[in-house]
Length: 414
Image 1 (cartoon, rainbow, N blue to C red):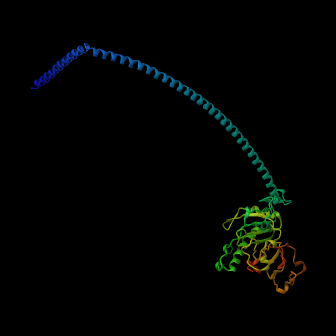
Image 2 (image 1 turned 90 degrees about the vertical axis):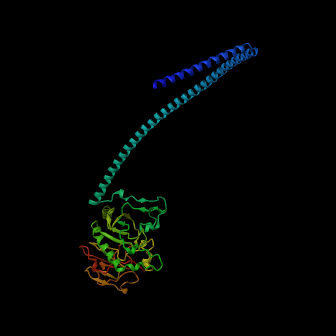
Image 3 (image 1 turned 120 degrees about the vertical axis):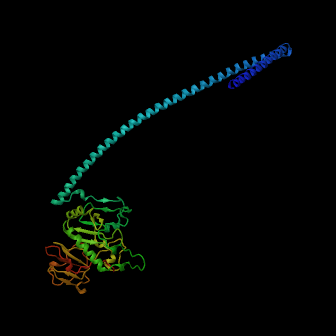
């Protein structure tokens, strides 16, 4: 059954092939007859000649166009080659310039490195020289502190904030200024002196409270005796250590509310040597949660530095730029003189307290202190000892117990 179907397929295929061959032969025969018929026709011969001429024209035209295209290509190629050569020249010049710049940069870098090295060596030499000079100066200072003698010359140098500018009048009086070192006027600080300024050394709530509002009741939060006790604790806390550096002549504390004067403490020693010892020991140390800033200063006159309203007892002066002292500002210590300020009592050499009445303080400014020898009369301690001060020498011995005396530490309120 299968063989018959396959034979049938082959037979049909062969039949289709024979039919196609017969049609092809018939077609070829008809075409040959048609071609022979056309060749005998004069129009066909003319058409063939025209076709030949057209083909020749097309061939010539194609050849001409090919030549033109070849010329254009060659011209474009020459232009491209020229541009490429120019580009190569530019690239070569740029490369050469880049190499030259790199060489220049390397040379400059080497020169800069050499200069930096020389500068570093010079700075090291200068630093070593400064260190050597500083060691020499430190040796002079240490020798001055240990053995005494003349004050080293380099410590006598003055420091100015604005040279060739007018002197600041407030800084001249109090060694402080509300504009600090940015003041437009000149602040002159000594390299060394007998007076030290410890800025914002003493602090208390009464100094921090600024009573600028009318009817402010912030002063009700503290009493005067609390201020007295607090300042008394501060006084007894710092004086014994300050006393270890040398004899103290004056110890003044500002009770102003202004930030540049608030709690400033002025310590005047009898010698610059003692002041220098105190400066080296206290500067940079911490007290009461604050780092101490100690400076040397010059106070030409304590009377001009202290607020005039305090002298006249006519106003508080808390917000002014001049000093507002605590009442009792001079300490009592071994071998020193007791200066009791604005008190109507004085301590005698025997340890007794003598009460002074108004009649004992005449208008001439001299106090009539009973039961005293003339040698215990008022001594000259500079401008800080004024009309309302009584002076009495203290016998040699330890620090006197101030609690036995009538010492007031309140700020002046008029």
